[in-house]
Length: 302
Image 1 (cartoon, rainbow, N blue to C red):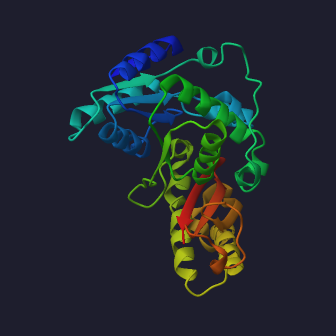
Image 2: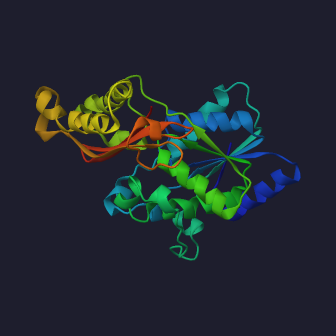
Image 3: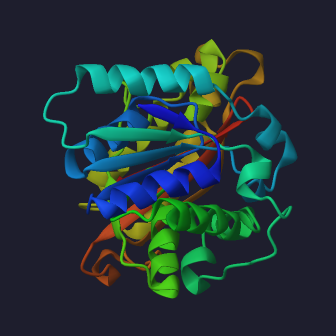
């Protein structure tokens, strides 16, 4: 593994890899790595000759300044995790991994980018109206990473389900021949979806956070006999009332504050009114919940 900070050095390394006809895999991250990220990196190492992992907290995708300031930055620990994965991994195809850790000035040498992306209906639901400019900011940085790394494949986790749809739409817009590889959510033993934000949870909040996934799993079972609207209402009510039903688990006013739970077509991300309205990929439930001042997201497939 080699760490690279300069974009020019990454471009040079990619140029040499292209000369050797090596297939490049890209894993974009914002650092604060966990086993979920490592699962993406491991898959990229198995499926490509040369892998680029970016670790960059992208300021232009944050519409909440406080969230940007609190986002964990653990570059040295991240590099150690990647090195450990490489050391213990068997069946690795890739002979080289570059960890790209640029500064903001390196990624945006001309200052804050002026380009703006629009993705139509796929960004107008769920996260879109609640985080104005977020997906455009994601698209800007991902486009730059695509230009620098020139990957054959790019790997993204399904926890950020709407983001995957946006990146797919980006690829359609810019006509890059890149294979988008969605990867399954990795969960803790208690079911909580792994997230860099989990480390900001208090012990009490971390103890009840798995309730989100448990509730979604029950919702998937309910889908066999309940209507879409009834399932949505039950999920929101169950989480919102958790602190009332379980006061001993929720000290000091701790409670779930659901922001949304939508059941949508898994391809278009548009809300469905009944299960039969879902298309070829079925339906997916997407949720955002505040807990202990931390915004957590998760999904369930129906």
